[in-house]
Image (cartoon, rainbow over all chains, first blue to last red; front, side, top):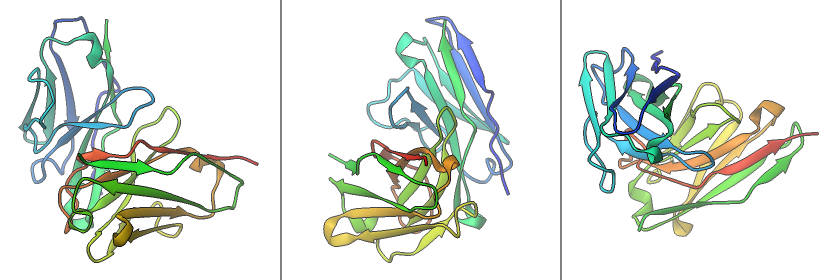
Length: 108
Length: 121
């Protein structure tokens, strides 16, 4: 079965650019999706179909895809962006959803 | 607006069952799948499965295959998740989430607020 691999943590200073990667063999065939989760809250969708931003998500959030890796980029990071970020894809042959292990973004 | 409102926190003893509800509004219930995801304390997201709210077909993660049941009541626009044979490691927050499709899994565009289930003797 497929797995999605994320770095456990990423740290950036305010105003810098944060890049969070997600790698997996499913990704060349299926889209990647990203969720932001703050402590005590439900996740929210911040990117879908690799690089599409839902309404209400700030423009500083962007997504890209290359081969077996999808990347969530946050430009001009703000303190409020500190959260856990989870990538997600689909194993279509198993009709199932995959989550990455999550990345804790720390804004220094 | 789209809303998914889950039932309240539960405390259960080992071996018991728990049934969580997910009351939806703001969209056509039978047109979009509902997924169930759980998160143990301090851990990541774990997908449990999904239900096609139109025909009731389900797909369960192998990890929960023999212990979980998803149902729905279209007239009440509510989805349900029942987990049996509870163990201490089932202590987690359980989320329902809507998929923008119904015939195959895609992604989770709206989430419920979560329901804490504590399993303790």
